[in-house]
Length: 83
Image (tube, rainbow, N blue to C red; front, top):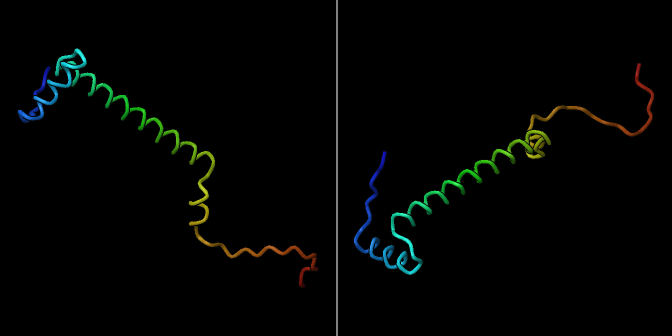
């Protein structure tokens, strides 16, 4: 299956001039660019998943601070409990 992307004459001329300078065709250059963009998106997705997993495993301090406030008092003195 193939697809067609539209480019203005000005865009295509610029691409053609650039690719001639590097010894590529506009078509192969575009394919390399698309493959590179897909690789970058996949790398970004994996990084985001890793960060989410780390955050989940370590417990996010932000989530702990934003949680409901529980009325627990902690005393460091050794007082006898009231009877």
